[in-house]
Structures are given as structure tokens and as C-alpha cells.
Image 1 (cartoon, rainbow, N blue to C red):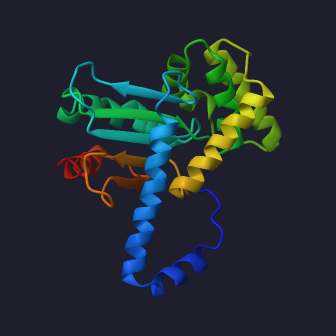
Image 2: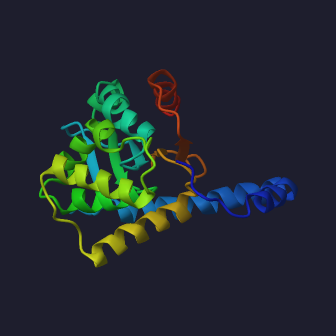
Image 3: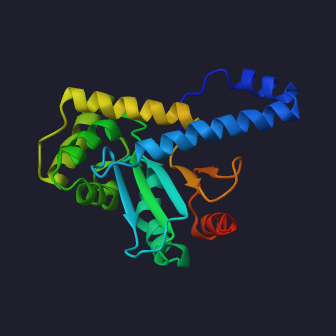
Length: 230
């Protein structure tokens, strides 16, 4: 689910000749911007296009894993249905130290309009779970000669059937969803999904935020989480 990236060659060229001290300063300033985003975007009790999970308890949260996922993304579905369950069984999660946040990040038209139906439901978490678990039944491969528009409509009809609703978000709410996606893309430089951010506020500046993209095999993902555990 690659997204378009402009001027990447220019960015590489500039970075290549940038002094090491400047790079460190830039990384720190970027982290400050990202940390500010995390603290403001996910602090509300009323969830706005994200779902938050944490093991019940009184242990302070020392790790926050933010997963930017798209409904029609097969790798995102694997993370939701398989890897996340293993995370919930890990010591870091069951101790209460890890909070996991799923952020709606529609990477294509079908995901975007499917998100509209999900977040118009009374229980978006349950609706999202149903679509992820049944993704193969509605996000099918187009092996016919039908137009892209017709295939898109067929997929969305299946989405409505699974969710048992035809209610969607208003144009204003859909615009907000798109704007939030673009804001996250700008802050973290997201080029593909799933995209993961691990935030550890107890660490020194310059080491609080780590990112990961794409691959979600449990062994390597677990090592990534564990290596970040102080």
C-alpha cells in the first residue's frame, strides 16, 4: 500500500552533506514536534478516529504503541488479527506498562469510505474488528473486467452488509478524517501502512520515539518491542 513520496532524492542528497551536529538537532526538533502531536492527538476521552487499548491496572504507562492502519490493507489485517493478540499476551502489555492505539489511516478510496461506515456505528471498535476479521470477503481481488468504480461499489456494498448499516459520516466528518490522516503523514513522514510509532516519555530526548513500517511477523516485532524496553 505504498503512498506517493515527492522529492525523496532531494532529501537524501541534502541529508548526505548535512553536518552530523545539524542532523542530531534536526532529529531532536522532529521528535519534539512528534511528541507534541502524540500528547495532543491521543489525550481526549472521546476517541476521534482512534481506538485505545490497555490492560486494566494502576501501573503507569511507560510505552505507547501507535499503529496507523488502513482497513483494506492485508498486512494491517494480519497485525490486527494475529500480532495484536500476541502483544496482548506479552509481559509488557499484561503488566499495564504498554498502551496500544489503533489510528484510522485510510490509504485508498475503499478504506476511506469504509472508515465512514465504521465510525458512524455506535461501536466503531466492534465494527472495525468485524471488517478486519472478514477482510477477505469484502476486499476481494478484481479478476474480472469490471470497471474500478463498479468494483469499489461492490466492495462497499459488502462492507455495509457486514456492518448491517448504510449510515456513514457526514462530509464534514469525512473531511476531518482526511485532514487527520494528512497531518499524521506530515508529522511522521508516513509512506506506507501499517506504520508504527513507539513512544517512551521516560527516555531522554532524542530517544523517546522509534518508528517501524510494514512487516509484522511476531518474532521480529516482539524483538523490536523488547529492545525498546528499558
